Length: 270
Image: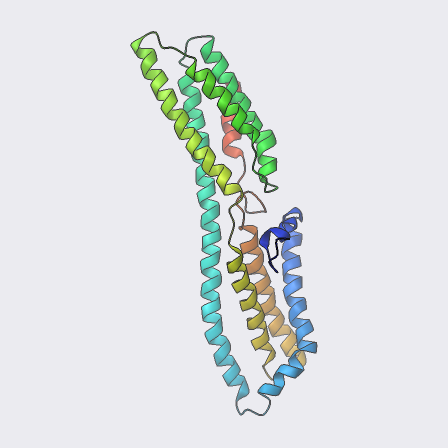
């Protein structure tokens, strides 16, 4: 805990729950909250509109206006969360592409430099797949990859071109290495990226107010439970979707290491 009454990181243990169970958990939490409030809170809230003529029409109008704003908010936040995942996936794909191009460049080096450089890149790729990715899926920024990139960089700088052709290949390899480092840094920054806590405050408060307005309707109790339960279930589904996309490398909607796995297979075949 860091002193805030709600910190998204305090709830990241939920990512360890299988996605289908987590979805049911969100739905059960929202529906359970609505049903419990219908029994305990609704009788007190009804006192405010009990003697108001056409109270259901008034409550329905207020709920319609509120749902428009809240629906827009949830939609925009969902798009933002998906965009974060999409951007992180693009960074991963570009890093893998730069790594593949760098591997092709160093393959043009004379031996034993070429073989040593290819081995270092193959070792880095294997590390990303087997060790870095599991850490990222737990929200941990992997750091050992830096040691491997520094070792490769030092080895690359040791090479002294002897011909104009080697000078061109070496310059291109250095350029490609810098591009690779740029996309790698962006991938590491994406590990901790998530929606700010203020967005979660607004979403949770909006869901509570949405449910509270539904408690004001005057209808049969069973009808209240069924109709309100449907609305609460959908709110729970939306919250689960946004939570699932909150971090690019965690949850069911997460980025896999498939681009690196494809490159590693090519490295083994070479």
